[in-house]
Length: 476
Image (cartoon, rainbow, N blue to C red; front, side, top):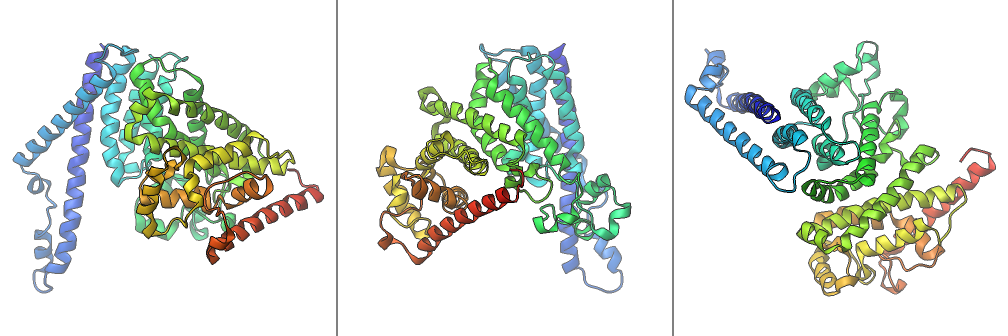
């Protein structure tokens, strides 16, 4: 029965995706023809008729029978191929478990893989693909009821279907848009979500999604509600993946491949629990946030042990370095939080786990060579990577990534936002901290000296802010 239902679901998916493809082609081609007609139609008598003739507004003209059949056959082959691949991965192997649930979830896999293509064009929240998301939720609900509660496979499927589309693009669901004051009396949120799909209307009625902190008077109490709901569910899924076993071997391998990216994404987006422009530090007073960080730090340190397993190394292959970097960055986010939190509650210790873990992970990320030459100059990438490779275990795993990834992550976690933590580890605690720390001040450029001075000033201002709050009796 489940097999028959699964096949019927795939047929429904084939029909729906064919419909979406036809509509998308119709809109895109007519938009292109419209733009072309604007520049090629000469004004004068019969302008309207000439202009209209250059478009393909008639669906029968746009889609003659032969082209229609070709699209149907092509989409049928795509869906058959995806169904076969998914069955081979999750059902047709001797290690497969929970087959009854898999029959449904394989159909969901066929749909989600095609939706990944749609996400190239559309935001995962877009109303244009909302019917597909509803269908995917229905399929997931049919399958997950046949999975045991003591197995994290249920969470893994949820992540693949409903969290990964956001994590892949490093985005969150739409917030409840902040409506401009003039339109607030008559513009409910659900109307705003529809209008936001049309860029010109969005610019007229709504403020940008990332409202700055000095404009928080524009934000009502439900502004981040959809994002907070998404983050809350994401943490539940992360907790299940971190604390429950996965008995299906193939799904366990999928978990190993997905977990570092999920950890990186969630740790990066936690600041959006704050109802306004994301402000992570404002959440340090919240016990639930501190507890989340505490759990994540323990989970990520436990997962780190997998990197020394030869079987896991073989599974990752060329992506081993990327997965290490993603998990290391998540660990840096957690330890940075706790370094600040323990300063605020006056429990900071250089011998504490957060500080020691921060130094160890940072040094693994950038390696010893990051101390020995000016970095992140475009002309130095090739030279640095060669030097890094020659150093073997002393090299930094970050420099095995692409130039753009190195540039972005180095600034985010090492030289820019990581400057104050480097200062604490090196100057306050006396640790050797790699990354934009030079062995001799004589080798520093003016900019590099300024960066170190700026990090020291940031730390001093942070301490003064804490002391000021303590003296005024403000609750920490």
